Length: 184
Image (cartoon, rainbow, N blue to C red):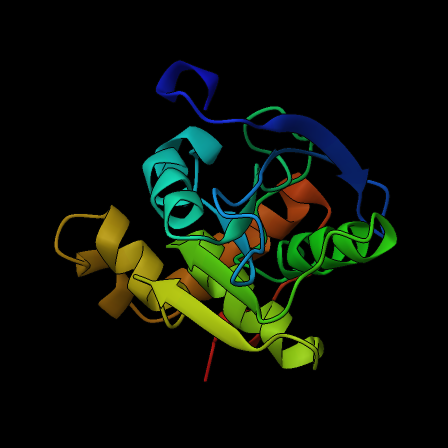
């Protein structure tokens, strides 16, 4: 943000399960903010992916907490969980702002791809959020694998997703099921 002429502050906060998240606090360009936006990126990215959006929002009068999701960027290690664990990152961010007396309503959760999935999941748990902006969320594990493989050929193979998820769970120590990855 500094390179683009924006005032910002490096901040960090912990999730309830102990993962340290790294973020940039970008205050509104106006004296009285129009609201607060918690913003994050897609899978295997970091907050730099959506910095231009945060700057646009700050210029428009919103204050923005732009954070690296767990396991990405400068945040602490954690396996990707399809938004199951990452939703807690939004909840921790909201709690951090409340504790620092920086939360101005309306409160918006905004994310891209995995960040969008996380925002949707978090909003289902956090009744104080006023809106969600979800850009390109994938509705389930099948959609993710289809996007990441040749035309989704593998997703039509019986049991393929179950085997992949079981192997992933063994590697990460998670215990996810295909239903856990379904946003419906």
